[in-house]
Length: 288
Ligand code: PAF
Image 1 (cartoon, rainbow, N blue to C red):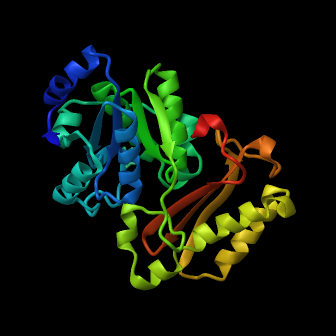
Image 2 (image 1 turned 90 degrees about the vertical axis):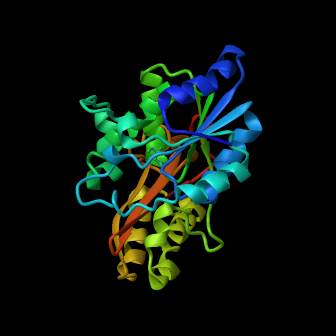
């Protein structure tokens, strides 16, 4: 596996593939890889002639007081795991490469970015949209791979790609979970042993709402039930539990397949923000 740190070197490495019209798969990450990232990489390796993965802890998607400094950085381990997964090229730029002095471009979707995660993290998706657009423009992949775990991110990136006419196809890979259901996340390492023991409550609530969607019928009933569960779990501070349309994240008014509902949940355990989501019925094609 090659490691390149500059845009120029990456473009030189990819030029031959583009000219020969060979497919390029791309998995952007912030490193601290886990099985969720690696499953996307294996998927990309199986479906493309060449697979590029990036590691860049993107400063513009962290708000003031968030964990930019503390975010785990383990490039040597990441590199070994990527090579093992079959990745061909690791792109690991520094901040100056992605945001040269004088950079001032802003790129965001005001509505999609201000709901759900955007309430607690008002500028988070601005940074995500900007960096993913930059990366797509640099790599120009045939296929881009993101995880379903960050569901709102995948909806926002899909919309950004449509509005900017990016040609790449977006593949959203299923959330990879621990045996007890906790969604894998690089931030799970922040949890204490006791918090880790209780953390699967998010998944358990999503599962129950999915299993009992017919009985709940209405989103408010499901919401009420989830709030009750979290009232009995003082280690958590529930931020939201919402039922939204899987394509555009608009509110749904009934838990029926035709409304394509996805349940989204976010809760704090101490300072650690945990996220999860689940389709209540089979996922709509355009969200996979
Ligand atoms: O999901 C992530 O790890 C990041 O938001 C991404 C897509 C790599 C952009 O920095």
